[in-house]
Length: 169
Image (cartoon, rainbow, N blue to C red; front, top):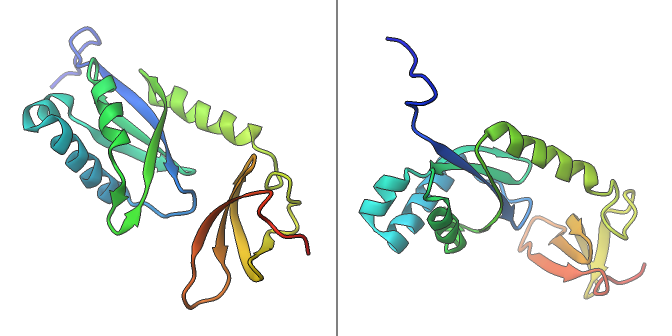
């Protein structure tokens, strides 16, 4: 069986989505089922079958998704309705749409180069902070937003703070 020439191939579009909050491990299969559920709930079975949404890969807190050309707008709208994957509450923020996976991977690499080595205003060697007289570990810091997890093994909590909320040691 020979390979189809490019003019006869089905056109696809690829979406780059950031998985928020950062640090939550997401499996591709679980994300696929969550996306399929949100698309089906919003648009119905016929549009879902025409859209053919799929998860290509999950890299560095980003997901690369695939759909058919012409349905990328509906796919992005359906992704905005997604709020849970398995037992975790997540949000997918669509960053870019492209015709190739490689350009989206380049975009992920360029975004990683623009991030500072230290976590925002907090030096890299101090990845711990205190809030409400409790010790927290900093997961990610983007500008003024700081995601922290309480240190310890029982009753840990995840908080979403700003740099002004952190206490000085």
